[in-house]
Length: 132
Image 1 (tube, rainbow, N blue to C red):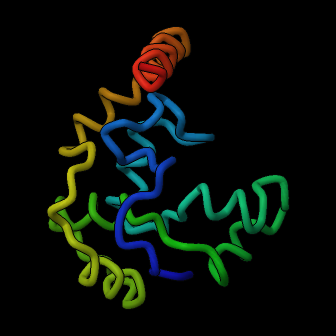
Image 2: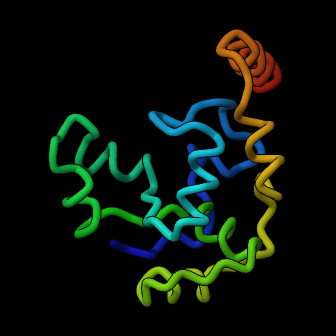
């Protein structure tokens, strides 16, 4: 696992401009619970580009070569949750926790707990704004 990301990537679900409900197989509460449970949370953009989620061994390969999600590191720091894993704890200590992300946990859950049609409307609104 790598810890080179210093801020959330453009596709990070912890960003305030993230695509709502775009969490793959996770539920919004499942993401929060995985961070509370001290599980590694890989940058899904990095995993998809380097390994691919269709690879049956993606998790094992991600432990070796993928970036840890910067947003998840910041989220854990803001919860005052220092990992018991020394590698993740070191990544948490090095990242600036004063970055603006979806936090506290309830804000993250509410933001990502939308229907697909609501998410599609928000995406269309962003596209319109970006064309102006």
